[in-house]
Length: 410
Image 1 (cartoon, rainbow, N blue to C red):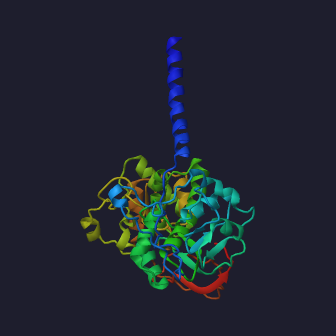
Image 2 (image 1 turned 180 degrees about the vertical axis):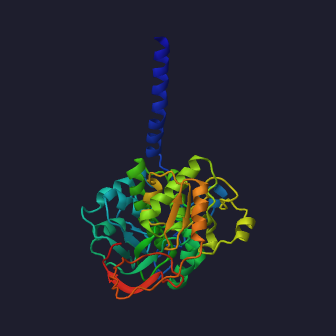
């Protein structure tokens, strides 16, 4: 009983210490000097016509050790540090995402707005998505009250092609958008937890006047929304460290096939070989970084000593190979029920799967057998087949379109 009383008394003392410190700082606030403006944000362009008066110390103040009261920085009460009417250095370009209030609040905070947790209650019930460009510094209160009144920027379509590496995308995007590729790389790694593959293949909308920070914040944020949805569907959670494994598998699937219907079978081969501790021995894993979309030769397989060479090392490559489609991600999480361990591309571009190495060798021998001469068929009308537009790799592709729209969402 005495031990319990001592522990209770110790707990009360420990809890009273932060309470006492809080009241002490509230009664004795420290002086806080204003911070200089950040160069990457708004800086007021108008300068005062007359310079502010410079106070000079009184004669003898230096000898007596007392400073003039006019030069001392004002003391601020912690309760008054939050002034919503004060003009803030908000980012010039702000993206208003669609979705729940919590997601929008997290997006605004990610873009650099100085928000507190209580500011989420200032957001209107319904907010029109789109891009906002601020022409002058405004207060947070004014920003929240006029968030639906700001005109939305004209946008154009941006395409992230499936199978493209980050190097592919930034090289072309920087040239077409006239942005520094080094800045784009820096901003990408500031927002995305993945070395590659952090931008999902698909269509996005970006304004014409653009800077690297908002562009990469938007592209990675929209991609992680889909990553989060797919991961929660299969794992009931989204952890980037755990999700990276499936993103790597999806990037291999994406390199091996463009056909969604056979992606689960390729995923089954990868999962089966990993479960048996077999080397993947896939050419696709060598299409990483600057070697993206390059033909893999036997010499390259022998000379490449990186962890991406799955002929040399067991397990998965250390990072995703490039951008993936939602179909490839779905296949990585949900492989087909198959015992296949091998596959080879057939003459029609589709893959043939085998359970054993003997079956695999037989398939290869059959494919290399000279084909019989083909007799042309006469009076046969082939039906026209309508195909959906693809976002697969194209060497002469254009990342940015010239068509513009207003008030659009991705």
